[in-house]
Amino acid sequence: MSIFSFARKAAERLYEGKCNIYELENTRDEDTKQTRQTESLVYEAEPCRISFEDAPKAEKYTDTVYEKKKVIKLFISPEIKIKPGSRIEVTQNGETESYKASGEPKIYASHREIELEIFERWA
Image 1: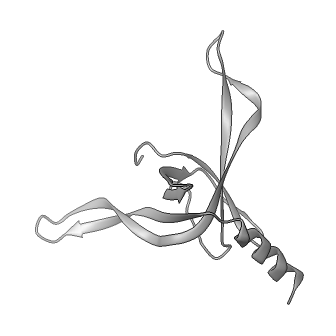
Image 2 (image 1 turned 180 degrees about the vertical axis):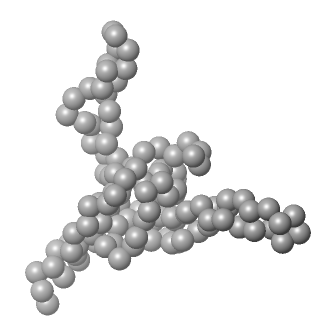
Image 3 (image 1 turned 90 degrees about the vertical axis):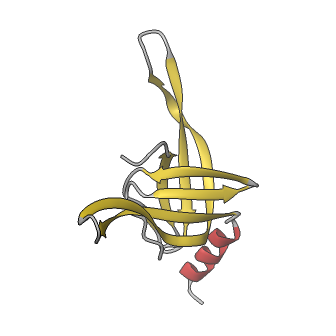
């Protein structure tokens, strides 16, 4: 067994959540001949882990108020491909929350690491 296999097994032992991953896809209504975007489930109940950390510095919100930024990261199997902007519904520690993938993932032999934002609505 390679060192990467050991690293992956160690990372996967930390997964305490499950996630569903959704993307928008174009759907054509044959009756109306109109195309609209619908949410499509791409992956279901994938083991994962969410990590929260405070950013090293506060973001300036207004001239007098600073907002502390929270960094949210998803750790998941390296085979799972998540497009930027996808909606990721994570259940961890008995709580379910929706996030969106905010950019390109960092890909390692043992896992993918994706920075997330709170999902408000499809753009």
